Image (cartoon, rainbow over the protein chains, first blue to last red):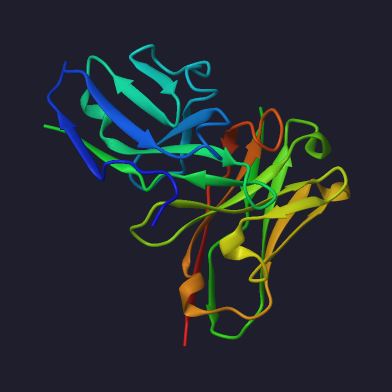
Length: 111
Length: 120
């Protein structure tokens, strides 16, 4: 069972807006920033959002992130077929000398 | 261009040892943390541990402490993930990734992954 909690699946139709939640605790999301990764089938994960709400160069502004307390969210607006992928949240956890924790991943289906 | 190039797929028997590699290029290898991430078949991402190649400072995730060894060679800009006695449950894809701004920052560049298959 993953330390960060994400819904296992999400779906939407092209053009819609979808959100994916990520819930943690005070030692991880409550104390540190959240990052989001996109993993297309058969490929390595790719950084999508860092430091809660920052987009790396090249990531469309359709993707946005937010954090409040011990929870975070990823929003995707103007959904496109190529957004069909697995999405993971991650945060540094301050417990036990510090280590990275991930969410279990959310499989996004574009209907 | 910043790149992390990982070693090729491995097929091993239970009880055997293994060392896989991750070679960095296009940046100062010794000044960024490197993380290792496991993905078991059909499952999610889990961080195995991280290493700072500059001084080999290492931090293992609790679930992996004592199970694996992370090391780095500054002279060849290469990080390693090592097992002394493989188990079937070590079968997974293993990714290395660079941590951009410090140990607790974010993984901005990822290797292509190394598939490890362990059978009896």
